[in-house]
Length: 283
Image (cartoon, rainbow, N blue to C red; front, side, top):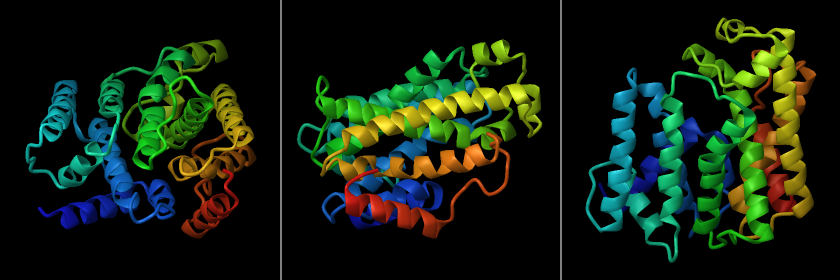
């Protein structure tokens, strides 16, 4: 597969399966858009492994394949996969932290676990590897890697956590269809609820309170991002989080029921919000 074909593969896949990040990537320059889309396509590959396997062992084998593939791409090997030619270009970026991609793969081990997270602490640990790791890698792609000890790292971390927590709420119906609930065990125990109603496609008052608490934490992280004001060129990497506030507002109006209709904004609404955020330089 040629590099052009690989880039088209990545763009098509992200457009179909991750429209929020696809629309955000359109605001990147011609130089940065293809590697951003390659990164997002890589994220899709590892994020959907849990959906596409029926046994944990097979899922772990696929994750290990990606670890091995990253090593092969770093070594300059040719790998027969649609996105790998594009991903190889990402790894050639000066000082690109490939360790973040390995961390993202490692974080996806939890997707294969047949249990909910124990606590919000475990949820945030998972998101540090996955959502925050992806956002930090995107910043590195656009030439603005976050300083591990500086304020820029805080902005990326807060944006990743806001995006990740919002995403977990959005995914509750999808995960329920997979017979999985991602609400922390300790919060369900405290609220006196179990996973069974969620698996059946409905929530009780206790579930709503848990979701309200998670949404409040996501909104708090989003407000921290807004207060810090991500600067260009990192803005395009954190731009997807500009859509989180609208979803959280819709969720609140639906009394924190993730199964309620009309929670997902339409494409035009997303485009307008992203355009406004990119033009103003604020998410």
